[in-house]
Amino acid sequence: MMINIRQCTFEDLYKLQEISYETFNETFKHQNSPENMNAYLEKAFNVKQLEKELSNVSSQFYFVYFHNEIAGYLKVNTNDAQSEEMDDDSLEIERIYIKSTFQKRGLGKYLLDKAMEIAIEQNKRIVWLGVWEKNEKAIAFYQKMGFVQTGIHSFYMGDEEQTDFIMSKTLI
Ligand SMILES: CC(=O)SCCNC(=O)CCNC(=O)[C@H](O)C(C)(C)COP(=O)(O)OP(=O)(O)OC[C@H]1O[C@@H](n2cnc3c(N)ncnc32)[C@H](O)[C@@H]1OP(=O)(O)O
Image 1 (cartoon, rainbow, N blue to C red):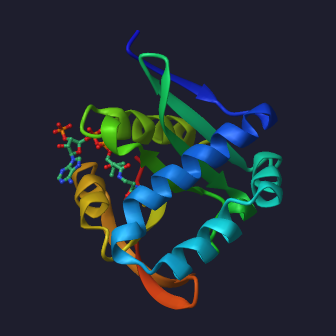
Image 2 (spheres, rainbow, N blue to C red; image 1 turned 180 degrees about the vertical axis):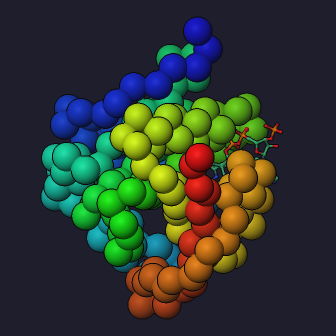
């Protein structure tokens, strides 16, 4: 099989840190200062933080493999692991990141389908996510996947306040 998916465990901590840094950096370094990028990377992906997230029963991480190489990852949250106050019948896609060399091969859709599958299994009604308003590529991808904008919220990249679009999809 060309494409495989596997749920991450505690043992994957350092691999997870590596792909988190790499993909975040290549996605956002062109539109943000090095200071703000470093501040965010250190805060979001330090070992203690990732340990905490990996041990949260309401969060799940998955690696997607392309020809046996880690090509990207998915993080989903339910209940109080969601990064916004949301009802218990919703699931958050907190991160879908595909390494640039593996993009446009269907892997992002593969991870998104996985998230939808988890939501259905857990009887959720809404799948939602936050995406930076300037991340046009990801917004186009989520629109293509049937998500619509349902709100906004702000977050900090270092000391800069930025706006995320909240996008959602309702399951039948
Ligand atoms: C909640 C968050 O995580 S927000 C941050 C999202 N992640 C990032 O920005 C990280 C960098 N980007 C990526 O990782 C990827 O580009 C993703 C996740 C946005 C898309 O993943 P990819 O593997 O490249 O997309 P994939 O090949 O699965 O494409 C699926 C469909 O979306 C469409 N699509 C993908 N990218 C785009 C785009 N830039 N513009 C329009 N349509 C697009 C494809 O054409 C495809 O449509 P099709 O099924 O009709 O052929």
